[in-house]
Length: 303
Image (spheres, rainbow, N blue to C red):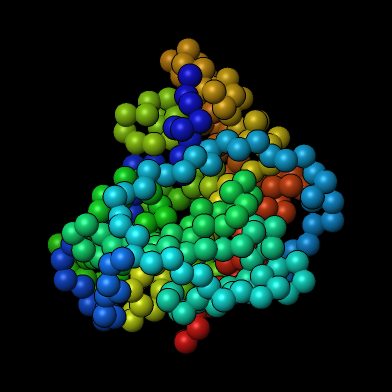
């Protein structure tokens, strides 16, 4: 039986290839003392969903907190936010971003950390751990192991044997079911589970279907990328997806059944097709619209 802890939000084979502890081409401020061209998306208005609060609460499935590397906290920081109806409009000078998110996600707190061998990591924490995304980012020279944690996103600049260079952000998510541009520096990436990873955790960490809002940050900031990781399926759609493997608990006997594995693969393919055509249930459609609207609200403070 697969435990909840194994339902983290990443797979090792999807680890973004942006490692490196070497020199980079971004200006770094004075450290704080320790104490496939993607398809464009329309910019939808942040949605209101009458009756959403009264809807049944989705069960937390794959929302386990990723393994956090040993990063020392340098300082807590919070973006400046103000209410705008049922949403919060925020500006974060440290990241050079402005964005709007639903007030149901709760208040937002940021934490900047310093890597043991260089670089910085950043964490966003919303009050509502059930509904809000997990979020964070890192500098290109952040040198702690990523461990499959997609919230240690370093932006669209990579440092590898070819040197330091800017790449098409979608190429960093090679196994994505889809990758769409929501702005000049913002992508929406959809990742779906793989039967081999679900049934054999040795290669990596199991994850549920997720959408990632990946943001490339300005060059002169201490953090160079930011990722918001969210589940988006309704409870019904999620249960239908995992039914061929015996549900969320993953029946090991069914994992050893080639027919069951094939049924799950077919279910994933059907889900991918339905996502592409919009043939999804109302709750899933709302969640996707929420992700799209949030992504469309993100802009750099200084273009």
